[in-house]
Amino acid sequence: MLRAVIFDVDGTVADTERHGHLPAFNAAFAEHRIDIVWSPEEYGQLLHITGGRRRIAADLRARGFADGADELAAAVHRTKTRLFRERILTHGMPPRPGLVDLVTGLRAAGIRMAVATTGTRTWVEPLLQRTLGDDVLDVVVTGDDVRQLKPHPEVYRRALDGLGLPAASVLAVEDSAVGLQAACAAGVATVVVTNEYTVGQEFPGADAVLRGFDGPEPLDARRCRDLHRQRH
Ligand code: XBP
Ligand code: MG
Image (cartoon, rainbow, N blue to C red):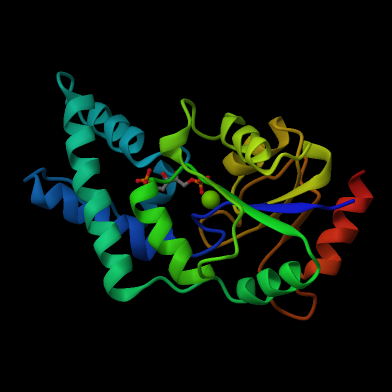
């Protein structure tokens, strides 16, 4: 029986990457007087490196910053985290169309909800508060709470621990191949809801791949139950 749904955040709860994280990374580079401006296409390539700090460090190294790349990446990422949090507090971040209906339906059906993200708690909390409200999520596991980021399954294992549920009674909702790998490695059935950055990716092992939460066949509580039942 489906007892809980675990949501990814970036690209799943909200389309954060292109119009949220990317401008915050570029503003942080500028604030540190580093001559890097990631284009939307370049950023799309860099998304396979999870975690903003690791993403910055990898790009600094690729551009020849050998010594101190990790320390510099950590400093730039602190700035990026502050800027992104401020942006969320000032402008908000709209949930993906249809997500709020799904969450309302899951609640009404008595299906619990959690979050498993590689993002940083400083911005994750206000984003979730503004998109989903205060009393929706039982468990929120962020990149700050784990040693290994997605595609490693640690964040999913911790979310399952927090829920006190086995993997077989849960469904994950992800937007990317990397997120799918993490959920699959934790043994959790997974629906992928793609976005502009992930629509061309391969999703081996997904229980369903959808283009959005809404539309003629929306992802609702009944469909979540059906997909979960088909797997188990
Ligand atoms: C998303 C990420 C995050 C964000 C940036 O992956 O990798 O790193 O791009 O957030 P997922 P931070 O959706 O699979 O969790 O800068 O806070 O790391
Ligand atoms: Mg994601």
